[in-house]
Image (tube, rainbow, N blue to C red; front, side, top):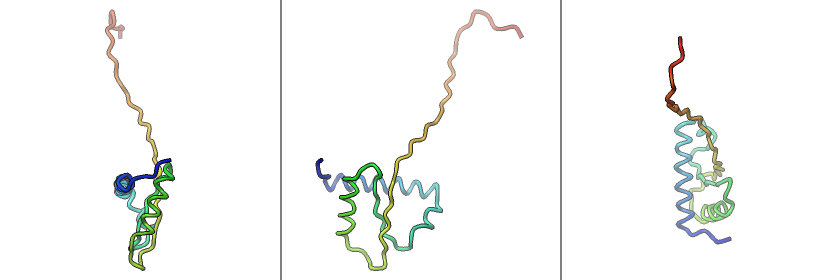
Length: 97
Protein backbone atom coordinates (compact mmCIF):
# COMPACT_ATOMS: atom_id res chain seq x y z
CA UNK A 1 0.00 0.00 0.00
CA UNK A 2 1.48 3.33 -1.09
CA UNK A 3 1.69 6.20 1.34
CA UNK A 4 -0.52 9.12 0.37
CA UNK A 5 1.17 12.30 -0.75
CA UNK A 6 0.45 15.55 1.10
CA UNK A 7 -1.41 16.74 -2.00
CA UNK A 8 -3.66 13.65 -1.97
CA UNK A 9 -4.44 14.17 1.72
CA UNK A 10 -5.16 17.88 1.14
CA UNK A 11 -7.43 17.08 -1.82
CA UNK A 12 -9.38 14.56 0.24
CA UNK A 13 -9.70 16.97 3.19
CA UNK A 14 -11.01 19.60 0.78
CA UNK A 15 -13.51 17.14 -0.71
CA UNK A 16 -14.76 16.00 2.71
CA UNK A 17 -14.97 19.60 3.91
CA UNK A 18 -17.16 20.46 0.92
CA UNK A 19 -19.39 17.44 1.58
CA UNK A 20 -19.64 18.30 5.27
CA UNK A 21 -20.56 21.91 4.48
CA UNK A 22 -23.30 20.73 2.11
CA UNK A 23 -24.62 18.38 4.79
CA UNK A 24 -24.65 21.21 7.35
CA UNK A 25 -26.47 23.44 4.89
CA UNK A 26 -29.17 20.77 4.54
CA UNK A 27 -29.09 19.70 8.23
CA UNK A 28 -28.01 22.66 10.39
CA UNK A 29 -28.96 20.87 13.63
CA UNK A 30 -25.81 18.76 13.33
CA UNK A 31 -23.89 21.81 14.54
CA UNK A 32 -25.52 21.39 17.96
CA UNK A 33 -23.36 18.30 18.48
CA UNK A 34 -20.08 20.13 17.80
CA UNK A 35 -18.48 22.13 20.63
CA UNK A 36 -17.59 25.78 20.07
CA UNK A 37 -14.09 26.37 18.71
CA UNK A 38 -13.71 22.69 17.81
CA UNK A 39 -11.03 21.49 15.46
CA UNK A 40 -12.67 19.13 12.99
CA UNK A 41 -10.71 16.16 11.70
CA UNK A 42 -12.42 14.46 8.81
CA UNK A 43 -12.27 10.69 8.45
CA UNK A 44 -13.43 8.64 5.47
CA UNK A 45 -15.31 5.51 6.54
CA UNK A 46 -13.88 3.69 3.50
CA UNK A 47 -10.26 4.91 3.50
CA UNK A 48 -8.13 3.84 6.49
CA UNK A 49 -4.90 5.04 4.83
CA UNK A 50 -6.29 8.56 4.49
CA UNK A 51 -7.56 8.43 8.07
CA UNK A 52 -4.10 7.56 9.42
CA UNK A 53 -2.49 10.33 7.40
CA UNK A 54 -5.08 12.94 8.40
CA UNK A 55 -4.93 12.04 12.10
CA UNK A 56 -1.12 12.34 11.99
CA UNK A 57 -1.48 15.71 10.27
CA UNK A 58 -4.03 16.92 12.83
CA UNK A 59 -1.80 15.88 15.74
CA UNK A 60 1.16 17.75 14.25
CA UNK A 61 -0.78 20.98 13.72
CA UNK A 62 -0.74 23.60 16.46
CA UNK A 63 -4.15 24.48 17.85
CA UNK A 64 -5.48 26.55 20.73
CA UNK A 65 -5.73 24.73 24.05
CA UNK A 66 -9.45 25.55 24.24
CA UNK A 67 -10.12 23.86 20.89
CA UNK A 68 -11.43 20.32 21.37
CA UNK A 69 -10.72 17.85 18.59
CA UNK A 70 -13.85 16.41 16.99
CA UNK A 71 -13.52 13.54 14.54
CA UNK A 72 -16.10 13.62 11.78
CA UNK A 73 -16.53 10.19 10.20
CA UNK A 74 -17.86 10.79 6.71
CA UNK A 75 -19.65 7.96 4.96
CA UNK A 76 -20.94 7.96 1.43
CA UNK A 77 -24.63 7.41 0.95
CA UNK A 78 -25.87 6.59 -2.50
CA UNK A 79 -29.34 7.78 -3.31
CA UNK A 80 -31.17 5.86 -5.98
CA UNK A 81 -33.59 8.10 -7.79
CA UNK A 82 -36.24 6.57 -9.97
CA UNK A 83 -36.40 8.22 -13.36
CA UNK A 84 -39.45 7.90 -15.57
CA UNK A 85 -38.78 7.85 -19.25
CA UNK A 86 -41.61 8.05 -21.78
CA UNK A 87 -41.20 5.98 -24.90
CA UNK A 88 -43.31 6.95 -27.92
CA UNK A 89 -44.61 4.16 -30.07
CA UNK A 90 -46.44 4.33 -33.36
CA UNK A 91 -49.62 2.23 -33.29
CA UNK A 92 -51.82 1.07 -36.17
CA UNK A 93 -55.02 2.66 -34.89
CA UNK A 94 -56.02 4.34 -31.64
CA UNK A 95 -58.24 2.49 -29.23
CA UNK A 96 -61.92 3.38 -29.41
CA UNK A 97 -63.13 5.38 -26.47
